[in-house]
Length: 389
Image 1 (cartoon, rainbow, N blue to C red):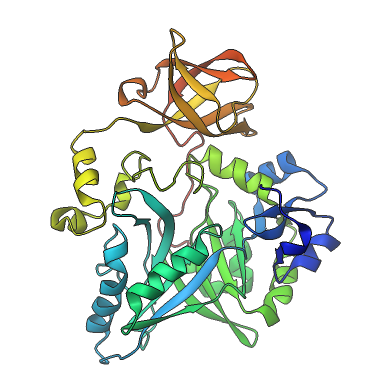
Image 2 (cartoon, rainbow, N blue to C red):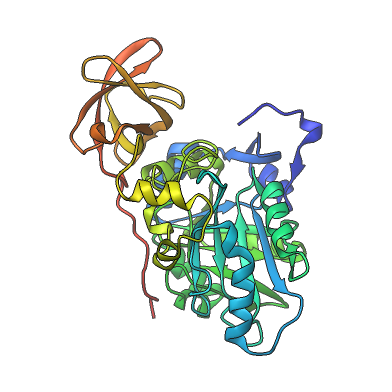
């Protein structure tokens, strides 16, 4: 969380709500956001694993890309809007079914990653030729510029980052949503739709960043406070800050852009092969295809690895050593895992040092500590693949 003058920070729609709840506000991606509430990060982390945690992620970059001229043929219009974004990414957007959400990566010509993002096809009839796109906060200005440039003369990108984006995560999240917007609880994992709530529309996806079942909800600024209060009125829900969001995603083995992903790291190096869609691989028509296809064939110098660390947590930037003390890589994310009561980390090492069970070391404050390569996620994902009803 980089230092930034308080006067330069943006605030989210629910800023006053966080302050009233005792949120400790910190700079993050140009915004003032709550890192924790009075209960503390460990308690918030465990509550989310056991019940339902409510996160304000309004600093993210939700948007809608809509064709300038639609033919009225839903499939043809979807193919046309997909063709706008596919030259920038490695995912098969043309193959999305109505209501489906896809995780993909925005790539540079060298196969490095500009950002990871979600792209979804609307489920409702009459919305052919539109995509719902959510990018990361720290890169959203550049991301939006790239997408808008690619769309020029074909489609219009409309930003929705003035709205509130809330993430409700945890094993009781579906029951909470069912009590407020029953139809939304019927969504399957990585699907979304728009729902009526009071006198507004909520855009709800069954997705998240904790490894737990959950939902992300886009709501207009005028109704954000009412939705926040309604969700928190449920005894199963507590507000959760950025600190627990990070420890939850780390336990889930999910990469954080700017740490475990950057403009030099490819999807294959990051262990995100699933994000490179089969059709795109066969066509080799995405940025950096030559490098990425070679890496898929085994030409790799480094790969992302999970680590169990003995002793104090190894933080970002800590050197990773082989069992003989030679430096072979670096930690990109690390911390204490409340669910496991131990230190864990993510980093990059040569492929021959990444097999689970490989004995390694990390350098923490000038001292070596034992570490072991392990498979991720550290804590199993509990996504709900099919609807509850």
